[in-house]
Amino acid sequence: MNKICQVADLENEEWRNVLKEIKCKIDKSNFHRKIWEYVQIIYCLKKLKFLTPQSICLAIGAGREPILYYLTYKVKKVYGIDLYEGVFFGGEDESDIPTSVGKYAPFPYVEDKLILTRMDALDLKFPDNYFDFVFSASSIEHFGNKRRILRAIKEMYRVLKPGGVAVITTELKLNRFATTLPGVRLFRLEEFLKIGEKTGFIIQNNFDLRIEKEYFENWIKLPEEIHKRPHVILRFFNSIFTSINVVFSKQGDIAIRGEEVYHIIPDFIYRGDIKIIPQKKLIKHGEKIHLEIILKNNGNFEWINTGLSHRISLGVKLFNLNGELVNRDFYTLLLPSKVKPGDILKFHSSIPSPERGEWILKFDLKKELVFWFSEKGNSQEELRIKVI
Image (cartoon, rainbow, N blue to C red; front, side):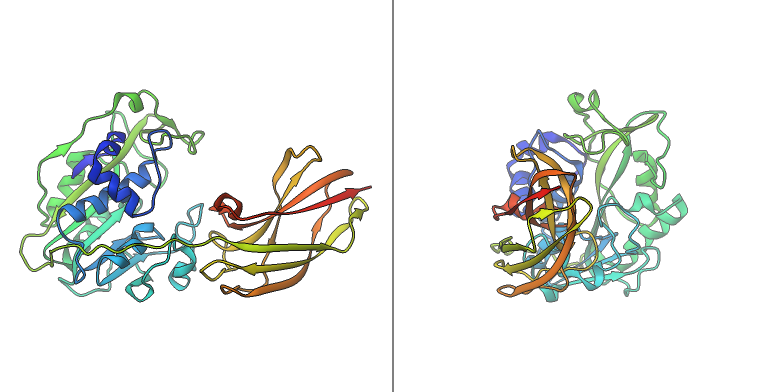
């Protein structure tokens, strides 16, 4: 359970089953260490029998991680805390997350079991000995100096019941000359374990630190290759690092442990009708293209139209007459209101005209910064125009 990120975990049937259960998809070619962290945390909690219907848990630096929603099917209550300041690209900590929890859900979840709150991890507003387990996926390395990180882990220890565990993933240095990244602390293993031990945590000394040669020799160069896969070992100037998972235990026997209950977790349905009625199809260059837009939500969740990441909007892609994509993000039309399942939304809007010529505009619903509905099998609407 205590180990560094390894692609070989895909060969572990138990680990692979967790990957499927939390509805994350990776294989050897598109492996990403962030998904590894989510799976490894749940894998450890399963092995230690902490996923029970009576358990109460806390996520530190929770953001909108998929395991928060998954755990609503496993435990009594899931609390997540973060500063939610909106400083990370991609909406990982958008300010509206605590008030729009459902907007960021990767699948339907048990809504009354999940509470996300804006709170400082260095000053947890929870009583002593309250949670059966705590977890944190790559957040503590952003907390600042060692004194602040020590304080955060002390707070985790304080709110844990005796016998509980804190499962933490963070950044591990892999080379002697590694320093730091901007805003990120890279740990040496001995340094990180010493911080945990100072708080009173017990750590089993059974670490798997084997480095897979294939990925060490083909590390990701930051920031240029941030989107490259497989994403396992990274290098930033003279620092080479990867993820490590550590289980910290609090001595005692009060925390609840027991048998897990399995539920079938449903999926969201990304379906919607799109109808585009142009005012005219022959457009003068520089003139706006005026449209009547009719959308119907044929899915099973409410389309949220606010914020940035994960809002539902209508994207416009630009193609030439040969069907070749010219601009995938030609324009984005914001929805004027939320749309409940089964409801129809009608509104008027306009988009700028392309350069002179004949064009195909394809209208596609999208979950902003996540995916297009067409990737889930939904139809796009086409409009042919001529710009003179």
